[in-house]
Length: 145
Image (cartoon, rainbow, N blue to C red):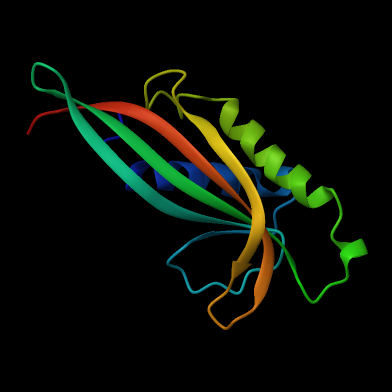
């Protein structure tokens, strides 16, 4: 069972990388990478992690990963940015919903996209990019150390 966001982050990164052609993605990146991604791209960032006592010598662990689907550069006209942008985000969500246990590494049925929010992401050099933020949540258990 995963006990950290890093483990879930790497699993999702590897899954999206393996399926990027089928998903219509040109690249997959970690948020702390220095990326110059061709679009569309998936950028993964760890979110919060919460541990609470569950039973004798066991924590219930809530994991959160944010996946930014970077669709298009705002300098491209609107006609170029079609419904295909949102379809890419839906396809990523469906892929993650197809295995809600992340290969048996989280509690079965607890891994899911909790929210999908379209918007604009500001890149480090001030470039605005049409994006959709997907927030994935999952639960695991960890033994006390």
